[in-house]
Image (cartoon, rainbow, N blue to C red; front, side):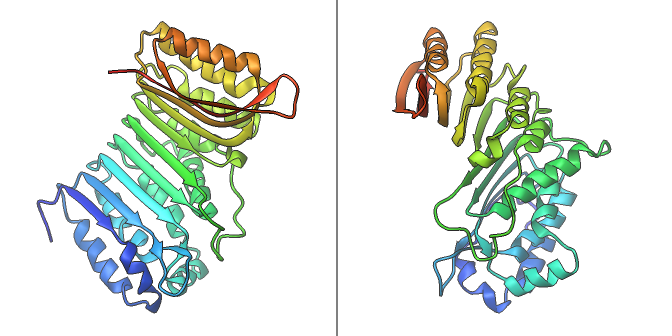
Length: 315
């Protein structure tokens, strides 16, 4: 094995077309075993998705995801960067079914170990067209939050959680309903060193008072955040709470003389026009420049739909 390996970049997209035959399970198992012995490994970047040979469905490898578990367990005090991209349904459905009948949830096991990495400073999780993966991530956060013996990854300074839809959900991803975002946001609220935050989740995850309160908790007292991007995916701003917490964040940043380099919000429906104007005034007062600004008319009098508000600071 590569004993001096410090960084792994793996794009497994081309493997998805042939994995349905089950030929790669042994290969992935050997790969995972050898990788776990790389004691100098610090960074993992993985694209675990691809399009099948006989269909247009996005697929991911359960066997590859499971092969990484030993490395995440053994290197939990060493890894500081993890960037993973997942999409679609299993490319190895027989293997996934075999594990499921034995009560094994590979995605949940994977995310539990990811969120248990003690020295993680950079975390990027991008999910496309897979409710089950996002639900597993939120469930992992719930489990770990209630376990006082698990050390949380409080060193994270760059956080990216992205869920996007580019097509229809895969055949095996119909039943899982999207969970609320609150447990996930509460989990990361313990990260006091956050500098860059990117959050993109469906409106179903954001809607509701407990989710907005959890986002407020995540941003409160995070005086080192210099870049904030949040997509609410057309979530309604009930009682002005979304724009209210964003305004509180900007006041916090201004009072602590934090020079924001980027501030972007997307998809807030039925926002109060005066709240939008107040947010814009705070950004202008912070010395930032507007790069994109798009509002659309709401069906409710005195309200507007915030499609995009993007500000940056010239270097």
